[in-house]
Length: 162
Image (spheres, rainbow, N blue to C red):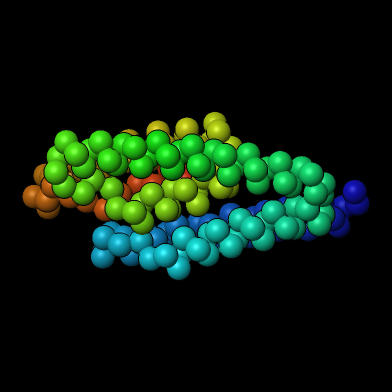
């Protein structure tokens, strides 16, 4: 591989991280203000992941690109399944909505960019940030509910850099 191809891959990688960061910041602000995560942002991240896989297949090994996408897909399915089970258990015990489906979809798509270790890091950071947000909302806003999207976004971004 020549230097121009390597430089191109570095620039494209940075561009992908920048787009992910911008989308996650937008999702955080919107969820904080409206308590909703618009599907358009989740779909934008999904489209970006598919474009990344296509570029990986074109400029690298198609089998490696497929393996990467398949691995992140399995991680995403596993994390999403666990989150849906947790959501159901919490809702049965508390008789109120615990996580919105936007949170579930965001984490599912966010995990498409992560491997297993990164996904665990993302969940850990999101959980810790969620606890902090929950305590802050309870103390300062006197509200029992809070937007979890910003915590998920922080977790996903942290997971990307681990």
